[in-house]
Length: 457
Image 1 (cartoon, rainbow, N blue to C red):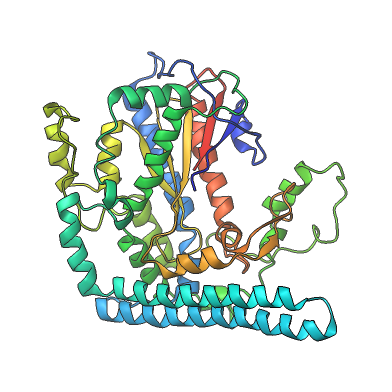
Image 2: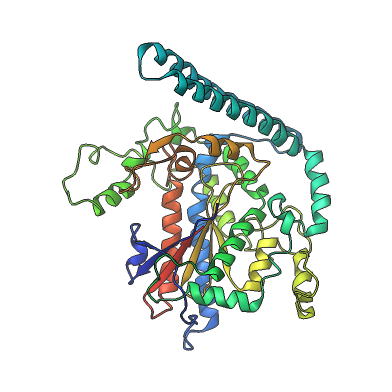
């Protein structure tokens, strides 16, 4: 399901507000350009600093990932063994949780609260889930066998090396014409009042491409970073029990300020006054600081965007002019994401790993010469069993402590933005908000429109 929303940030301080109003994406309007008095080199330098700042934010998520996932081994065999054990463990936990609920509902037939029909529905539903997850686990483990991955890579290289999710329409990234691109960006940068219940088809088309493009990121460097952080000594930071001194995430100052900003009651509650025992920056192992600098200053076309098997992207006949042949040749030296965005003229940077070692993550796309940002969340990859479990973790849980005005949300998706277990630094939600502040502050400094449109997909 593709869902697009727009956040309109106004004024120089609007980028610092996590409670901006959501509106339907605007239509029409002229595309914004950098004023003539601003030097292009200055813009490039400022954009590079934006990339560095976002990577610094994202790198702070890896200590939590290292503690959650542990060491995954350096060779293919040990990595696959770790994956298999972890998959079976998570499958067992989910199955046990599912059938424990069925057993509990059976008991409640006799003590009141559940009718036999409700129990029967619960039983059939749980049986279907178990069958689906069992088959999914077998398929996912088969798809992750190193030999199978190499065979698929060889097959996919004939279609530009795109991921499994995009191989059916592997030429879609190259088939976007300049006219379609300009129509979409013109609408996305509009500062006109949005029309109610109207969706611009050009914006929707570009959003769909962004949603597909995030699948082309390789998880190789992410897993390497987790292994590197797992090898560091965290004993002095975490103590004998992991995060034993950390307060729950919803008691963090960020969320307390968020709740107060939308509440008419300015009196601090008992919950708000609880002490926050959270490690401060600088208390991490020294080798983490060294690794963090390497992560921040990596090449823009390297790990965050490089595909596992970079090659040439396919194109349909008579849809791309021969003048683009030089662009196709560059695909051998860069990842699919980097190369496609080079053609489109946009920026890209992952803004959160979403508290998981799987391929799930969130990324930002923006035009450094305009006033819009797109935050894209990667959907479920068929070979990633952990992402199947997130989808099936459908229990509704309260999120009002994190997002005032909301009541309940899908637990699996909530846990990706607001983890149940306390985090060492920011939650993924906080990282995304801070990254958006960095981008919007930079864009607002170069436009006299006073507003940046933020889209989510």
